[in-house]
Image 1 (spheres, rainbow, N blue to C red):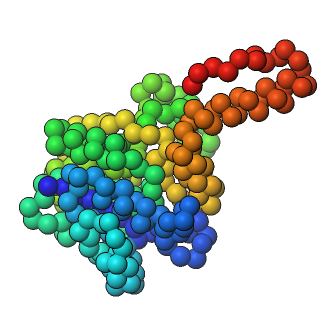
Image 2 (cartoon, rainbow, N blue to C red):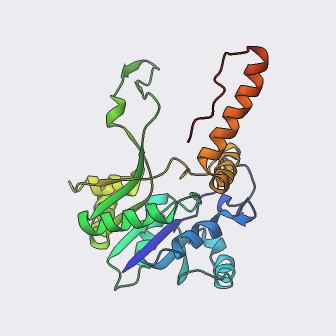
Amino acid sequence: MVSVIFPAAGQGKRMKAGINKVFLDLAGTPMLERTLRTFSSVSAVDELIVVTGAEEVKRLSAILAETPGLKPCRVVAGGSERQYSVRNGLDAVSAQNDIVLVHDAARPLVTPRTIEAVIAAARVHGAAVAAVPEKNTIKAVSQEGIVRSTPPRSSLWAVQTPQGFRRDLLLEANQKAEADGFLGTDDASLVERLGWPVHVVMSEYSNIKVTTPEDLLIAEAFLRQAQSGAGGLVRAAARQARNVWGKRHPGAVGDEEEKI
């Protein structure tokens, strides 16, 4: 059985909204609700655990209890760091559940396909993360601002959530990190310290984390894309290009539409 932990205790200082960013509206639906509904639509998911600030637990529990269409859901208080919040969430996982996913509550555009793929990979391999191939050139830079190296892009992946693990493995990784005083940047980094291989599952570039006001604009654009399809957006952009450039430079662009 599968539990999903949603760290949602961040203050969202970069968003500058004055409230927890997961409560912000995204195309008519609060981000947290949109995220929870998507996971609730996946048949393999059995339990949702939202980790939020201690002052929000009572109010959020009441709100989610009245939200239709959600799998069994509980709300627990988080810690001073994301890692500690996930640890608190682990303590709340039902005893019979053997697979645990961790997903940023502020990634509201995750798809059921990605969720299902991470669950399947976690069952087989013990540890799996959603990720996409990196499209940018990445530089390793010194503290003085000097480029030290350029890793080959073919080996770089931008890691997202959900990240899925065997429950006992994730618990062991958190216990070791706590004992060592180690603070990781994601849950997989804790498991990696045990020497356990973490498998990558192909995700979507639309599975962004909404952290800044600009991210909200991007997320809403992705939602519009979901309605018309990426191909529709590309065709519309191509038609506009032909109109603009065709008038300025006749013959500079092709007249025929490609099938996308």
